[in-house]
Amino acid sequence: MPHPARPIRPALTGLSPEALAAWLQHAGHPAFRTRQILDWIWKKNVGAVAAMSNLPAALRAGLTESFRFDSLQHTHTQGAADTTRKFLFRLHDGRYVECVLIPANPALYGDTADRHTLCVSSQVGCAYGCKFCASGLAGFTRNLDASEIAGQVLAAARLSGERIDNLVFMGMGEPLANLDPLLAAIALITGPQTLHLGARHLTISTSGLVPQIRRLAEHPQQLRLAISLHGASDEVRDKIMPVNRKWPLAELLDSLAYWNSLKKQKLTLEYILIAGINDSLAQAALLARHARRLHAKVNLIPYNTVDGLAWQRPPETHCTAFLQTLQRAGVPATLRFEKGHDIAAACGQLRLKQETADGLI
Ligand code: SAH
Ligand code: SF4
Image (cartoon, rainbow, N blue to C red; front, side, top):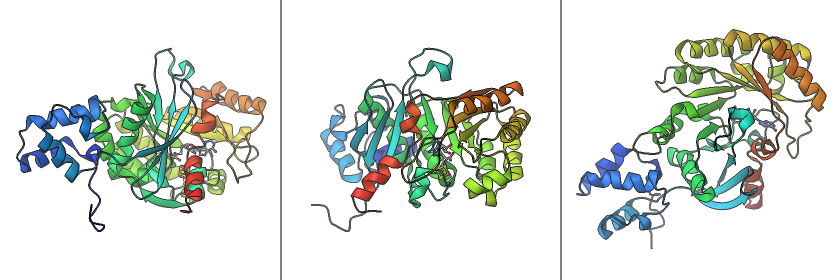
């Protein structure tokens, strides 16, 4: 029986190769075990120490005694194979986190390759309180650690049986408000001994945390950045995104120019279309100006309704007019209506329902 006051064991899926090697050395095991264990966790994705069949029983027992395997207990899947699927996980403290697997979309990737994108969460809840967003509704609970972030990728691959090629940090939370654990997770996701995804297949989305954008710009990996702009003037952004009061548009745009000076990949500006709030064609013209200056592409996303919020998406004809304003100004822009986004963009809602049912909220 574990002692009730015993601290939670660290997760194997959060250990860097160096930390695992140090633990093995300290416990008197040969160095080659590091590679074997990393292969079981990251390449074979077995999900349990018991399945690591080439390890001596004493080492398996030692690992089990000192570590938990990961941090995510799968409790629910929404959606079916071949469609967008959302996975809900219970964390060790009873909180919930979700991630969304979005199947190949030739319209987005320009080919028919069998690509799957996983939308990953970085926090439980979010402190930034954007007025339109389910994740911000119940406020902030806590940051995820590296194992809880990287573990979503392993768990979703195991549960779906799919290869995951792209990651977008667009689930619950503000990834740049949890930057050190995020970077530790990214090191595991991109590391050659661990998951080994290319950094340019990872997109971090932020509502506009200027100092962290500058810090990430200086990070050596070629990560992609998406900005949740949602308003092309301070007047509009102030109304729907409290973060804009702290870092107004001019400062945000400056930090993005700095990003461009250090990075190769094009920036993406995300723009939700909300009827009567940010969808005037005057906003489209301003947005086109910002995008042209930054050589950015624009993703237009018709707003998905959220339980308890009154916002609506504009009619399809108006969304198209907004898109055309951008395109006529020479800005590469897309408008997505596909169904996947109905669950993908509602990231945060499943967790809210579950935590409410469990009496946590
Ligand atoms: N906090 C980060 C990342 C998570 S949100 C950020 O804000 O960028 C992922 C994206 O979903 C953001 O662009 C967010 O603005 C958008 N989003 C939130 N609620 C939405 C809704 N109801 N409909 C469509 N997109 C939504
Ligand atoms: Fe947080 Fe992003 Fe939602 Fe804003 S849009 S509340 S920053 S998760």
